[in-house]
Length: 267
Image (cartoon, rainbow, N blue to C red):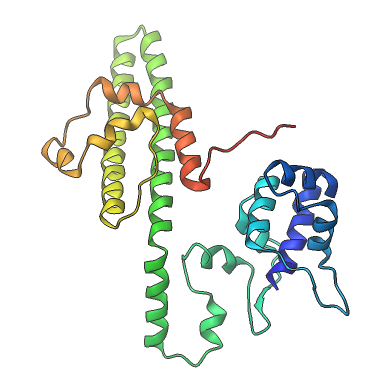
């Protein structure tokens, strides 16, 4: 069962941190769940087994806090991957560990569920379509976060290029470097247009778009029509100013994915 997998993974990741159970309990208490004591964590990891059966399951709240305390994605605690052995979802449903990572975010159906049922291909397709439709907000958030990451990478490159331009003494080298800068600015503009389009789709579906970093606030005032009407407009100095905000953009990406900025380990 999944609680067995979570118990095994909590043990493994706790030991990778070099923590004993008492240290993990302290971190859980700091995060607001003092009931995850040394004894509770021992029971989660061992299952409080009697005659081979687990008597202590793991709640969703506990899973979230344990993942937060260990600085790992919650999904990693639900799968033994990359060890490779299977995961039992229920006594009647099991699957390869890899599929936990694709089923939970809605990338694909749990394969064994379809294979062990008597459903027709038409029923399978309907089930798959329901899964994809339900997972659309997840897909949009991931797409938004990935575009911000790529944009941040281009921005970091432009920062280096601007330094090269300032230091260049050869006119030809300077011209080539400026051309490279302008190419990257054009790529950033395309990304900004895509970000605006995704945010519009979110709003059309009634979903609140992620908060943008202050350096990209101007995108809130943009629409996809603005880019269609001004396809060659790079917004001049606005782009050069925003590409310098890598840390702010990274913080926004963290909020997209985790719901909060990633904290640094206090140790």
